[in-house]
Length: 340
Image 1 (cartoon, one colour):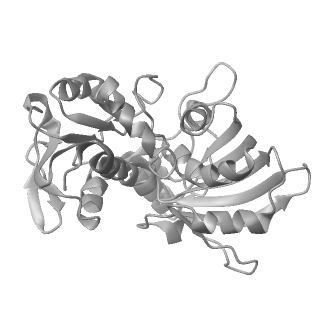
Image 2: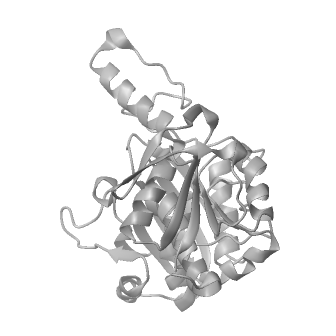
């Protein structure tokens, strides 16, 4: 016996990736509804060998459906997620709307799977920000061993994190570099993204941090441990898919780099590729389409007593969004709903 499952925002990048992952992981689906706004109504999407037509989100009745995977923005989520939850359908939300709500669990299944049990407070579970998701997968097994005091992270985030518009802008600007007559000014981003990097993701806050940086701080504390201090600098780079992070960690006690490497090799969702030779590390191009969070460049930080540095890469459309949502649904299945 499987689930009656809904994918909301099925025509977007993350929604389509959710459908791919549901099929790849053979999630037990008895019935699947794919929903979109009226602008995309009737658009066909693929689920395995099947082709499905989208239905109207505005008129859809969530009564009797088990789980809804939401891959739409905060405004649409604010309007439709409470309706789905009130109808008895458990919402797994990929937007930022509910991440900081104390009554909504924020879940990364490799890190805090037990948190799904708190879904009943609002019938909603939140998916973390893409940059946070991959980082906490790397941090948690190390925190369990030596307790993390402080994290300093610099991110190198791909344009797909801003949606299809970001991908199109990088592509169009890259072509225009070689054809100056067809100049493509910045629209999606604040400055040219082709052959450039932009130290600005989301809006600026009063203290000078950006919202993206703030998200990494607050979400890491909520998912792992409120005592961890985090400071982040988030940068948009001209990469289509795959987020990278340079992470500096200070622990309460000494953790040898070799032991850290062994711990990470055994950690769920992690793949260690760490050879001290040319190409002995993972880059965004190599992580696309993979489930794992890749860790490379593990080394001692000699400037502090108990420090490590590492390099972390993951497919942001997968672990940073669609895959994590499907994994939450799988965790719900084994710990709560017990079907399939």
